[in-house]
Image (cartoon, rainbow, N blue to C red; front, side):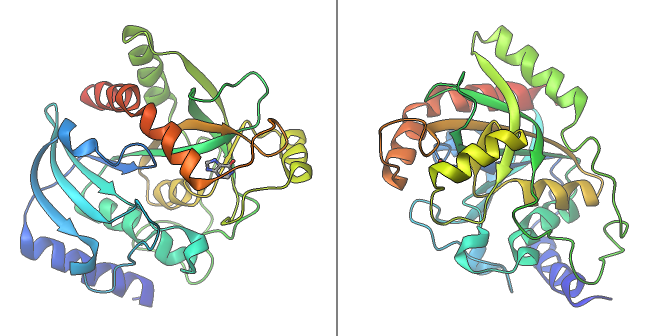
Length: 273
Ligand code: HPA
């Protein structure tokens, strides 16, 4: 057994010592969705700090715990707070929570985040359904010994974002009259925001939005056979695309302002899953 798998199993054993709940959908709550709990019938909360060996986020506004319960009738686990690569964790630890949710039983992973808009047709406050991703600027979470209990050495990444889940999200957005952009998400390491030259490069490469999370979690989930979907809240136009200087506070302020619609889009989509 690999060290990584042993660590995962320890976390899982702790989880099972608390509950026999089996979630079907995992939801990672990005900026703006910190108050998501009110949309769930929460049956159990597990602070990350209680789980042996679990990485604990150090970012302000990302206090960490699992929320277990129901979104509509769907058994779900939500992560209030995620760990980021820029905090200094190894990529394997950044995706440990994703793998733990797979061990809990999830079949679907719903990723959310705040991101900088690169596509000039986007506006601050838009939602972008992620259709594909570029993770070439961060290390793969699959580097190192393969956790063969989870997945194969060389997993295919042709369809990271699930066609059927995307159709569901689009349908939900239409029904709820929430306008929805679509595009490619590019993950950087952070924590610095990008330079304008970097953003011009990412635009040439085909990115529509940029952020500091998500792609690595999507890779770990696909490796383990979990179906993935994701939505970004465009909290700012990326560096050089507006006159504004970028700040974490502004990112959070926009994401918070859009939280009502974001919560509705996510909840109504998951209720159908
Ligand atoms: N760049 C990187 N990450 C981000 C941004 C951005 O402009 N906005 C929100 N997260």
